[in-house]
Amino acid sequence: MGLQAAGLDDSQTAATRRTSRRAPIDHRANLALLGLVATAVLVQLFAWPFLLRQWGALALWVALPLVVLAPTHWGLVHESIHGQLLPQRWLNEWLGRALAIAFALPFDAVRFGHLMHHRFTREPYDRPDVHDGVTHHLLARIRYYAHLLGGLYLAELAMPLLTFLPVTWVCRLVAHKLRSEEPIDRDVQRLFVGFAKNRERRIRMRRDWILSVLLHGCAFYIYGAWWPVLAVKMFLRGLWLSLADNLPHYDVTLDEQGRARNFRVPAFWRPVLMNHHLHRLHHQHPTLPWTALPALARADAAASATYADGDYFRAAFRQFRGFGKVR
Image (cartoon, rainbow, N blue to C red; front, side, top):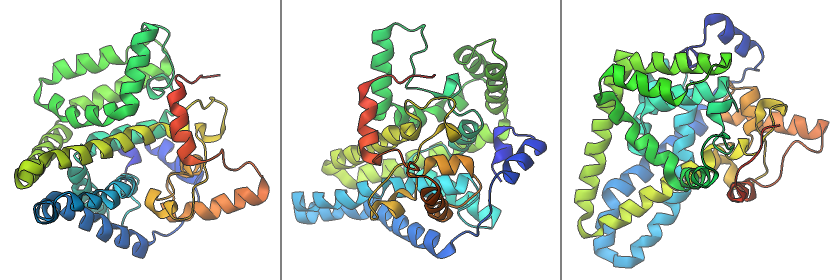
């Protein structure tokens, strides 16, 4: 499941699978995290407003575990995208879609974009940290920092609105945004236009967006006068997602392995991040479940002392230095 969703043909899919090792899905770990995240979603959307009315500002401390679990929530969606959440294909996709709705993300668009990211890592459309040489430098810097500070999440929130526009308009917009005469760029443009034309995906994205709006609209109503608390929590979730999106690829050269980097994190954060800090290994073995990556990291550590490129959280803040380079 998944690689075909980005337009990969059978031969390319087979080649990708041959280069990856195999490991079983850790059902217990995934179900435990699913239970934890589901509880967090229910608390955030429905239980927290009652606690706020009962305890007042003291209940604001509930925000801490909810914010900490944001990367776990996304990590479960990510495993679903790669077909590694549960072995049953229909259940894997159903849970991924439900988790995405609770995260206010368009599952079909995120899945397509993520698999395209794997296929065309650090190609021109996939490097927000690199100045395109055309946009005015000041405007480009504003756009870059807006992207880091929640802009990516806001764009993903608004993306389903495009499905309510005529298909021809959306295809023209995509073609204009990705215009280029380079062979790879033209291939990227073709795949994105094909995605925009797909009627079934457009219908699913509309449906999921409506469900997400209804879900969060009900939550804001339940919060009443405390609605800014939910808004801030959603902003912090979007801030984390925007900061983490390009973190393993920031300032990565085109000749680096996997065009991504591994990082170190304290042991507590590894299940929270679902080993997202081992991103180079994930790009090299995209069909492996998240629980299999530490064993590969240990093998790398035995072979080389430079298997990790510094601390994950320091790398997140390093992005604020500004544009990276492609060498």
